Length: 599
Image (tube, rainbow, N blue to C red; front, top):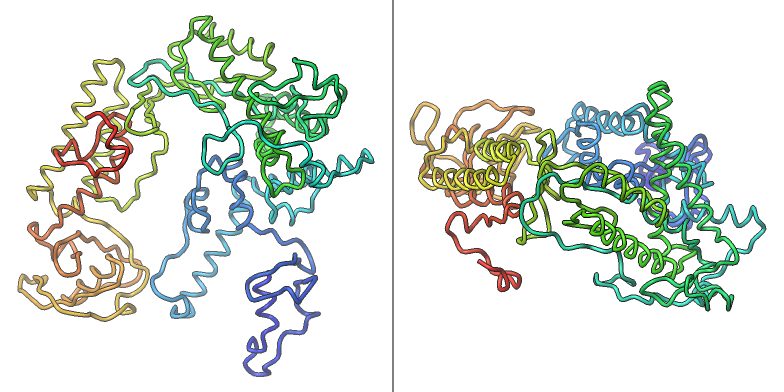
């Protein structure tokens, strides 16, 4: 909106009259024009009629990304978000958008507008319903909800409750009198110590159940009465009561009154866990009703999961570090006590990370027992999150590999493989996943590791000996405009034409590889246009790339393909305690960590 408003007031907007659009005809209102610059704005703007929903800031919101859309996207571009949520993408093109023909420009803009609209309407208007629910909870206008971060949503909830009660909102200086953190952060740049991480027991473990503490920190805030006015309260009786002291800290909690934060977050937590979450799964309700209750549950979850973090964020108006410090300390105590209880009843905990525990081969009775104990003694709910047929923990990197009951392979942090990955790498990758999905015993696993090792080594050997067909080495990428729209050759080379004769071809520096390949095809007689697929291989020739039709096996840059294999397999192999370069008999790149690794 600021950019559009600035454009409307630029005299160049009308090349004939040289006049800006009259302000009363511009459907955008700017409260303080002195703050308006092209593309930036220090003061809010709004539309004259209707609401402006800023989808870029909405999807950029970490809480929305993590808790509403389960981290399905990791980049905040329109293309990345649409690929993740809609399985669709923008129209791609190379070069400057101003060079596009008017028809192509119109198609490009229409596609962008369509994608943007569909982000608000997909899954039965999920996003809009989510924003409306958050708007009602946060007591903020819909356009503000879309523009502001979650700390402003929680501020809206707390400020509204203060005003409803006729209570004064404390100044920052008054909250600072509460003190600071009394624990030391393990992670650099953090102000206090975070959640408890239990180092994994290395190796393979069968029949692993992962249990999560449902809404751990909101539950702690509720049960332990944590709020800015209750932590380190002025009452001598509270400070002198050992039961009111927080473990591992110097903080204490008020027993004389309930805190506003504890009441509000606790109420939202109970609404979600005891009401909306159950309704969203109630098969007696219609699909539309279940979906609506699911949206409400998700909206509350977004707010709840951020409630603890904002207390320790300086940007938050009610920033109170002792509250965040106390919450994290109780969280660590909760996890540690649960692990101790598991040991007492014969459950082995093989890994733990903040709010989840990996239990090895527990019976259903024992899982129910530990969940009942956590609910009655700690005031938190334990829920089964995943059930793995087996899990493998490695000492090479902090990740793990698990196979679910249905054979799905789950690798922590594993990124999706791009569709234009060369076929021989893609086939090897899925062969490895298939091998892992069939493991049912430790002997199976050792056998699988050997098969995987053989697959990697055999593919690398075939690559080095140039036995892999060029078609299997190809990167297949679509061109989005005619090759003649790109730069000119900067040199010459030789290639075999389609009729089998040697012919001169250009060398193209500074262009994407698929465009270089496309230009080489045009030079030897191929007719290419926007939308065509170009198949090319990486070579040791001048441009470093050649179309499959023109390349020769001896020209293939095998090192580049070994690098591509490593990029694809490294994370998967590290979970199996393999190192890619070591499998190929090559020295690993040294780092400080390598000096301490056992070979």
